[in-house]
Amino acid sequence: MRKDNLQKIKLLMLLEMLQQESTPEHPLTTAVLCKKLFKIGIKCDRRTLSIDMEALRDFGFDIKSKMVGHEKGYYYDVRTFSIAELKIMIDAIQAAAFVTKEKTDDLVARLAAIGGTKKKEILKSNIVCFNTRKHTNENIYDNVEVLEEAIQAKKQASFLYYDRDEKGNIIYRKEKQRYMVEPMALIFNEDNYYLMCYSSKYDGITNYRVDRMEMVAVEEEPVSENAKMDTSDIAQFTKQAFKMYGGEMTDITLEFNDDLVGVIHDKFGENTSIIRTASNKCAASVQVQVSPTFWGWLFQFGKKMKILSPGSLMEEYRKKITELEDNCV
Image 1: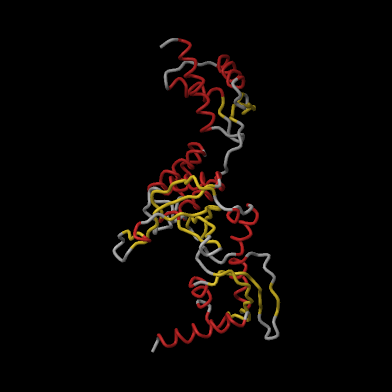
Image 2: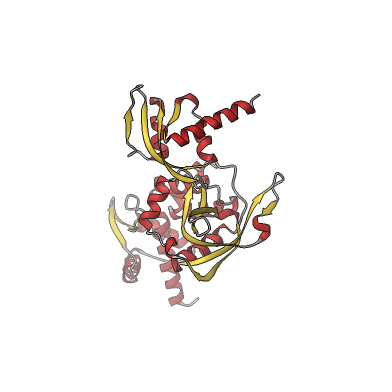
């Protein structure tokens, strides 16, 4: 191998060692670096190593040094993720139901590699696979990429949409006719990814699960003005929306026991205003999407929570309780 090629490989190997194994707290000493290079057949001494480090700096890499005992140590000074930060991201991917098992394994491996060899070992030994209901749509990445392209270009999008029957078979909606939508934003909620769209048919917002889409495409037709909501408005809407299921947005007041204060904060945010009622219970006025999902959430608390207003929703609440009682007969 030509001498100049060997020098290039030497610089690449040094850079990789520093990126993967060095930190400001644990720099690699001159002796350690020379020994590592020697093991892969590349000769190096203290004098030439100093020259190599200067060459890397000239190429724009932020190589720094500090004394370790009586010899110089080197490290790659770049903002990297801490073990805790990487662990949080890995856990989020593990929890996301829309990311398939194969994609999860790939993402986790690449995130762990960012931390270098030592951090990779620590992360690998602490990974807990706690989501056993991963979806199987391998096109999720492609779907997200195409939908994001449509959102940025303010173009309509189309796709096939499906459910699954009791045997897990795909059942296409609309007899496998394409959905034409006006995309507004991609939203992560309750372990799933949703496409928020404006619906001219209902003159409101609808949501679709991205993992239930096939053959997603960007259309030439631009979205209407109603679909051009500001990012801040979208964030406010998703903050107030109860869940990503269809339902009319309604202002309601809930009364609940003291031990459910944390539940209200978790669901509607810690800034939710809570007052004390005449019956010495707590009450909060919030916005929800009135849907089967909302009723299911409310009923799980039994007598500990009830609706105070509006009256129409209180009446609907009573009817649903009666229906449940009749269903138990």
